[in-house]
Length: 295
Ligand SMILES: Cc1cc2nc3c(=O)[nH]c(=O)nc-3n(C[C@H](O)[C@H](O)[C@H](O)COP(=O)(O)OP(=O)(O)OC[C@H]3O[C@@H](n4cnc5c(N)ncnc54)[C@H](O)[C@@H]3O)c2cc1C
Image 1 (tube, rainbow, N blue to C red):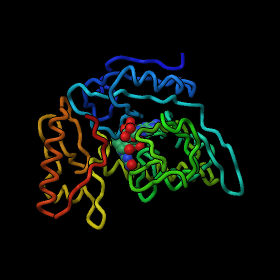
Image 2: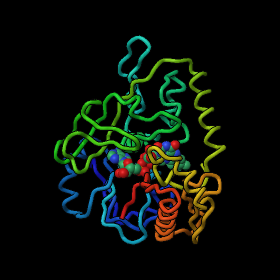
Image 3: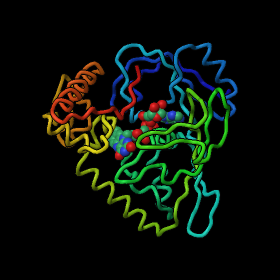
Image 4: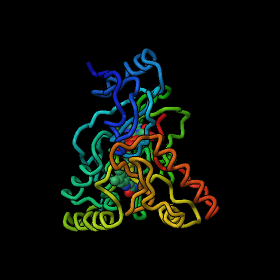
C-alpha cells in the first residue's frame, strides 16, 4: 500500500495558525508509486486537491472544507548529487522540514540558504511559496524541482520550466494543480562555522522583531511594491496589537496575525478586511494576502 487515506482531517490541527475546520480527507503519499493511484482516489473522494506541507502559510476557514489534503513523503535525507569547483547541488525530499535541511547544510559546509532560517515550513512548501527573507529566496538556489501533476505526470523541471517571483511559483505547463516532491539546490561550499554563524545572525534578527513562538502563519500580507513594508503600513493605520476575539495583529510585528487561543477564522477574516480598508484609506495601498486562504 503506497497511499493512505484518512477521513475528516481538521485543519486547525495541521496549521501553525491553529485555524480551520475539517477537510473531506487526507491522502498520505507513501512513495512516488502512490501517484499511479492518486487520480482515481481523488475522483472517488470528490472535492479539490490541496497540497499541504507543514501548514505554516495557510489560513483555513472554520466550516467544513471541500478539499482533499495531499501530504508528500518526507523523502530520503539530503544528499550532494553533483559538485564542481565551489558549487554543490543538493537533492532533498519535499516533505522534509526546511530547518532540518538548513542544519544539514551547516553541518556539511554548504552556503546559500542562511537567510531562510526561522521559516518553519517544509522544503516543498518553501518552493511552492518561493519562501524568502532578508533579501534572499528559494529561487536564488533552485536548480531543478521534481513535480507531479495529473496532466503531465512526474518529471524534473529545470529553472527555465518554472516561473518564480515574490512569494510566487508556477510550472510553465498548464497544470491547474501540482505537487512538489523533491528539489535540487545549487549551493556554495563554505566553512561549517561560517554557515552556522550566518544562520544564527538571521535567527537573532528574526527573534528580535517577529513573534516566532506565537501561533501564526508568518506575514499575512505581501510587502507592496513601491511603498512602505506592509508591517509599517498596518502600524501606521493603528493595527499593531489590534484584537478581535482570540485573533490579533502582533504587538511585536503588525504584519503577523496571531491566534492568542480560541481564535476563529471568521475573526481573522474580519480583522484582515478591516486592516485592508484602513490601509487603503490612509495610504492608498491595496494590500495583497501572502497567506494562502483555504475555504
Ligand atoms: C513564525 C513564522 C515565520 C515565517 N517566516 C517566513 C519568512 O521569513 N519568509 C517566508 O517566505 N515565509 C515565512 N513564513 C511562512 C511559511 O513558513 C512559508 O511560506 C513556508 O515556505 C510554507 O511552507 P509549508 O510547508 O508550511 O507550506 P504550507 O503552509 O503547507 O502551504 C503553503 C502553500 O504551498 C503549497 N504547498 C505546500 N507544500 C507543497 C507541495 N509539496 N507541493 C505543492 N504545493 C505545496 C500549499 O498548497 C499552499 O498553497 C513564516 C511562517 C511562520 C509561522
